[in-house]
Image 1 (spheres, rainbow, N blue to C red):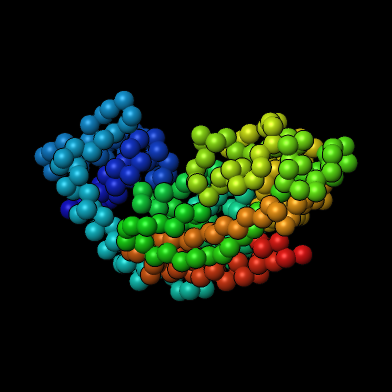
Image 2 (cartoon, one colour; image 1 turned 180 degrees about the vertical axis):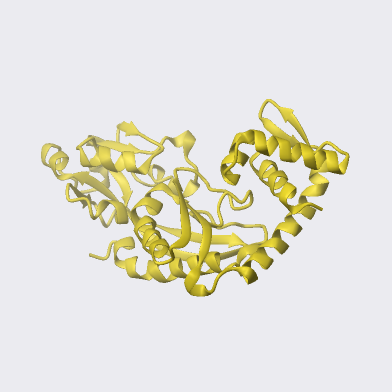
Length: 297
């Protein structure tokens, strides 16, 4: 069976959209369509049907999927043996992470790692959403939820702390905060509840909520900037808020949350040198950030 055609089948099966599969494969969407049609012609069957939500697998497509994934695993193992020596890593490694952690903590380290390997490119997918490892949206995924099922390698990467912060200018203009009950006199900045991508981000129910929100956003960067501008109080990761000179924590004993980042990768790619060494590097470098992550001032 033609592995090149199966690559296009797999990406379309995982993304469900021609344009999304094309972005993953770095080709035009018409190329994906042609390759999938060529595979269908070669097999003498229809693998996808077009629906209002995208491209859905037919029964024949669902039967082919595990066989294609088995070939993908074999190809990954072959690629791992054929790659350059450890000091000459090459290719692309895609790392998925939450927006704040990815941009503030991971980006500098990953850029430095890639710079030390001229043939290596790191794709950092730092978004306010879940990056799916089961759909192979990334080679390595760092998430708030531990993957429960699937052929994945999973490890605890680190814990981190979130505190309640306010801008110094805001705190100077509003009633003092001596207890949780004082929060009723303040405004809060936080997440849009019905758009939360992880239950680990539900903080407001654990404190005495204020009377109103001045701003709610799906973006932690937007929350940080709005808080620093004096728009209200916000529960923020210490690794984002502590380096911001306009902010200071309040009610540290009463409002302190601890969460965990989990790192995972598909079982079949763990021996691919560029992915394995990126994985090892991330585990090593995160130890240097413990004081920042845990708000140990």
